[in-house]
Length: 182
Image (cartoon, rainbow, N blue to C red):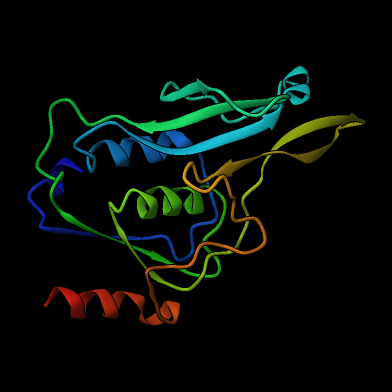
């Protein structure tokens, strides 16, 4: 990010991004936000904590107050302490029907905070985070254990995806942004 700190615009391409975790997001986001901001809630039933299954652990996740029986973590962004040149850059986030999971979490965070313009197709709708559980005999099952929510609406995007600000076929998203930057 420091190599591009003088950019007037950033184009982040998540059209084929299938997921990840909050750590990767936090590195990127710290360069883009001038002030601390609430990005999303990550909720899981408290009973899942006994299985050691909950929202991904991260130092920037704070304990929040969720509904009864729900363990809530608040995903927040904290500005980079020594690099601020990208705080004013225009940001475009390219998405497609293959953009999933944590890439959708990032799409929600950027869109609801108005920090980026989403361009492309509605995302995959793969919201619920999961936890592997051993079954024995070297077998395991990956169980959905929670969901990420929009703090403004309390809704998630499981099965419906996130609709971009500029809806165009995914293979035209980059050209659409480049046209807008000319």
